[in-house]
Amino acid sequence: MSDQTPYEAATAAAAKLAELTGIEHHDVALVLGSGWLPAVDALGEATAEIDTTDLPGFHAAGVVGHSGKIRSIRCTDSEGADRNLLVFLSRTHFYEGKGVAAVVHPIRTAAAAGCSAIVLTNGCGGLKEGWQPGQPVLISDHINLTATSPIVGANFVDLTDLYSPRLRAMCQEIDPSLDEGVYVQFPGPHYETPAEVRMAGVLGGHLVGMSTTLEAIAAREAGMEILGISLVTNLAAGLSGEPLDHAEVLEAGKAAASRMGGLLSQVVTKI
Ligand code: 8IG
Image 1 (cartoon, helix red, strand yellow):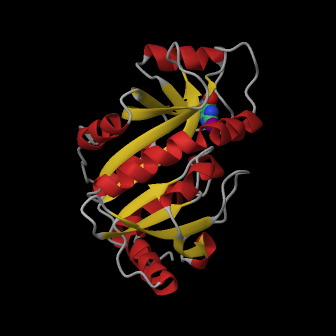
Image 2 (cartoon, helix red, strand yellow):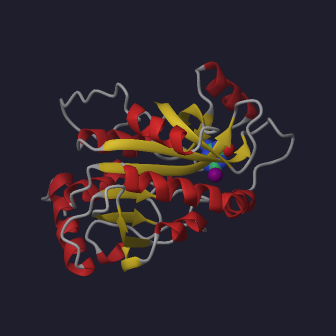
């Protein structure tokens, strides 16, 4: 691997993906975050399912509730044409310490596999008054507090409208009750202190989590259209009076699965 660029590594993974799934070209990629797994069955029958570790450059999943699988799903788009979805049932998180290139390898693989759009989902803490656990929120913008980038070298990628206004509008047409917010990525793996949550609010953040921003940057670099959707699985630390608990995250996902599944299955056919 060391003599390969990250882009060459992604091209190699995409070639293996095509070989193992029998699908030459995927159209739309979807990365599932904490709490989103129960929603995936609404997307349709799997054409193929492989272990992430069957592809070069991928690492085993490191979090309970994240399955280390990649699923290829055939669906029909809004014009009646076949569409191949590439669904990552898990992600590599920045806090795993495997490096930023490992975090965005699935994104670059999706781009190399032909995907022109990507849906990045996550579970996160919510700051806005009135938001409840189990509520999906569209990501309108982000603040990356990891102090790093997936891009190396003098490649000054523009991040204006990183989270596609077109795709956000499409989601709000499907579900007019969807709210939007600015996602703040902390490095993790510890949750924020209540003071850090207040800081995120002062900075203009509404959602706090440990993923997504580095992936979105890599997706933009690769030229993909990006939709980000957070599932508010808990009120951010200090807002509820209760300690944070990962079990609560998985519970919120189960409770909201049909709403999220409905949203995802409609949006991936319209993109
Ligand atoms: I799920 O409250 C989930 N992931 N940083 N804070 C951070 N990450 C999270 C949270 C949260 N909930």
